[in-house]
Length: 347
Image (tube, rainbow, N blue to C red; front, side, top):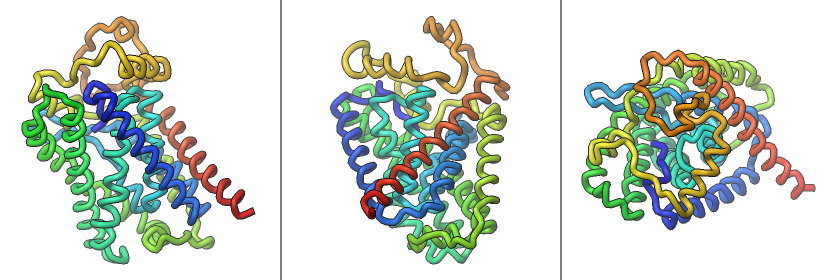
């Protein structure tokens, strides 16, 4: 559900940039008040895992569409909402800057849609009341499923509103909404099942992590995180480095909805103004555009060949590994920066 710049007006894109920046400031302030040093490495490895997971689109049967995990609910449950939001912002920033996945004008909207709803709406209002103290696997399963579906439905609604406010007459609000909501219901159900599986996996290894997040406290010093950290690093490496070859070639839920209305998966981008300037900047920063090596055909703007499946590609493997390392580094830098600010103020 990564939006392209062509879906937004500069006014709407800029407004959501401002809203997202304000939320990053709020999340940093709240995290600084109670940051647990032991969660900083966890922020890094979970960010890398979510980056790799988002490379794998899964087919939605009978639709010709596909979807991928958002990952916000997983992060919120394991890290708490404030750290989770900052990690999600790190993931989407790396994707936008270095892989051209989502536009730079749209980055504020993408962080808003994939970060705020799971972390600040679905987690506290849906997951926590349903999951309770987190001791019941059945309640965790149900809460993960409902929370993930709810967050994705809000994100899909938000995309339709953002395009409507941007004056995109090519995407009539009612028609766009009627396609976006049901396809993201199916995607949300899969995300909910995966979220429940990941949370149950962590709970079986180190229940103290969930207990600390639920109580907004610290992970006990006696609890070793080594197995969890190594496990998520391995999952991120395998997922981004090899499983990404098996990603569905079908358009994702957003592209599918656009294609059903306009006949094309993307709208025409502006050739001047803020959008064009940001596109030019992104072409310079994107070292592995579309999760692959640059090719002469792509540089010349020639149409791409229909991708094969599975797509065994060295560019995809390098992208998965490089992206995971970049997100790991950025998320941990965020955690260390927040910790340093806290210590400076305390000193």
